[in-house]
Image (cartoon, rainbow over all chains, first blue to last red; front, top):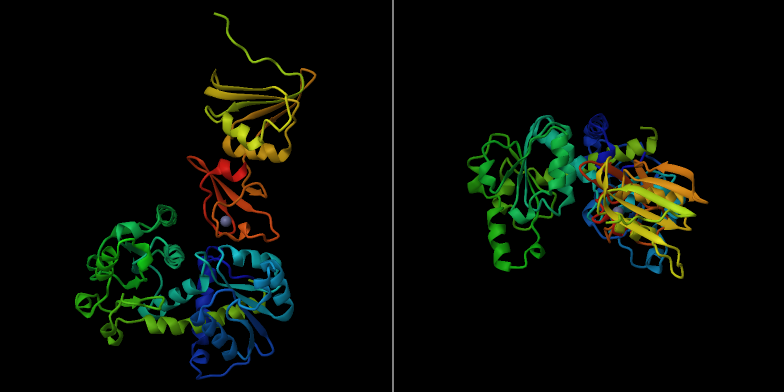
Length: 304
Length: 152
Ligand SMILES: [Zn+2]
């Protein structure tokens, strides 16, 4: 079993992973110890740096009694000397029981899965898939709002280029979410993605302002808008100001509403929001650990 | 006025029932005329047809199509019929059929796709047959922007 794309998972698969993640919580917090993956080795091959994701995986593996080896960026590796990814993967598969791959090229994890006789976990391939992020997002929604089915979720920010929100929209459609896409016109959700979730039965709405959903949303999932997307700096400034979560805005929020963000944030959420009951983004980052523990357990056990 | 007709061919391939206007694209993906070749190629476009109202037609002397080429044609002319001619007689008649997945035929138009990076793999695309035919890369999950360019 590989973890390459969220599209490879059924609703049932996802529920199963989240149930295992739930059981991992006390171990992830260090309240309980485990030697479930004792003597198992996880290789982390990070062809582009992502400290956050790598540490989350390593923590997950160590908490389960396993070991981790690998590299954090490709400098000095054979890949730099022109070795194909296919060869690097076959080599790593010989040294480990599970491979966590981060790579700048789209489709890299799929290729790795073809060449590896050990399970591959995709930790992000370029602008491509990042399924463990999606799973931890789903876990957060379930944990923090009490359920995952039929939630009212607003996705906010750069919805065009951010593949994280594409995978999340796809997964949420599986769970019958009411989706609202809030973005500046140039960064709105691609037609293709809208068509996909519609085909799955969702009826997404498009909006321009967070104010439109503040009273109804169970979750506001905000992402970073990159300056580089705007040729005109004043245009960026205007947009950054509109798509910002402040305590003023939260006065009209629905009770129990949660704000999520894949982090790192820049100015999308003001710091005053951190101490409110709405802020779920730091917990969300922590939930990456039990979610990845669940995946490590399930893929190394074999089967489906 | 005498109607101009395309000459029958002695040996070669006739591709009939090509979508009107698409014949030159078929020519392009077949890579004809081949360098140094002086065999006759006849192209007829917007021919009136009972079955399709209008169609394109292609006759290529001294050339038999390979299966891979037939597969390529199916992507841009899904209703085409292919007739192999030997000594002025029909040797073989084939209808193209649209495969669900194509391997090793098309190139991904996404420059950042792993299939464009010299890895030892065959490209793979799923073929989606809606209003128009679309190819979706099974590696990067993106759609091919120009099918003709991707398979020529
Ligand atoms: Zn591709």
